[in-house]
Length: 402
Image 1 (cartoon, rainbow, N blue to C red):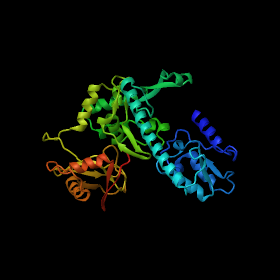
Image 2: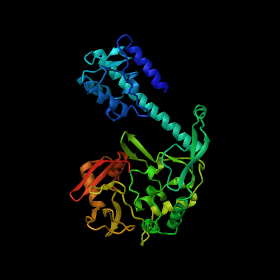
Image 3: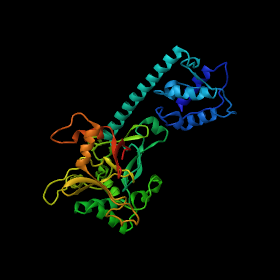
């Protein structure tokens, strides 16, 4: 709240002798990178500015860098000017005149400084969080994985926060769901398929992760176990007792990107009780990564995780048929559940044909002749791009972090 106090003091000093502050609009915990129309307080300000009885004729900002970044100021100033509302800044000592060349240059300089501070703060924060994960195994927030619950871990390590009564938290085995996680890993090690595991859990009436913790999963249906829910558990290294951070990352507000396992930040020592031994966890990953066929050859799917069904919006499954790689979507049907009546026919695409079309259309530099399509695949992953496929063809679109 100290930030709010000094920003108000700055605002009051700017308008001293000219007027009074009629209302406060202050967003808490909202990045300056988020547009004004998407921040709760500033969105309310813009809405009130459009009303005839708004009660103010100017908006005074305590500090430019706390309110704007990049190209936000010209957009906001234009919206307010259309309603006859001026913008006052401490940096200009009064109202901003967008027709004044000096003011325009100053706004550009302030925007560049704000953008630089955003990048610098992000790198400092990420470096600190990575160090806390590796060296301390600290739980940095988020939903606990299925099989765990959050318990008290003592006072906050920073004295100031501890003085305010803040406490640390850590993961601890959930007395109800932890045994199901252990069972899933044991069954997988015994050679059972993920579909068979999901089907068994459903038949025994075991609540799926979103049903077991509906408060933290309001965006999920909580209906039943599926292949994805079992696979996610089997791939989560936190079940070994080590804290893991940065498995998912938002490159820009609202746009996510995949984080490869090599980029995950993992604690150097155990941070919470393990539900599976590390040697067993590694063995499970080998089953998933290189399961051999009857002829002893591991099948490779270059576009796995990159093709999404345009009808259903889900990732298409890797599928080997007629001696070559392909991808299919059965529109919700799998071995873990019975087929629903009236569902569309299976959607299928061959990998070799799709790679040829991708190379021709995207024209990516650095294609390896010994491994056709590898350059295109690397291009898609590095830019968090997806292939959306349906019966009319395919297109490339931005990924969503799945």
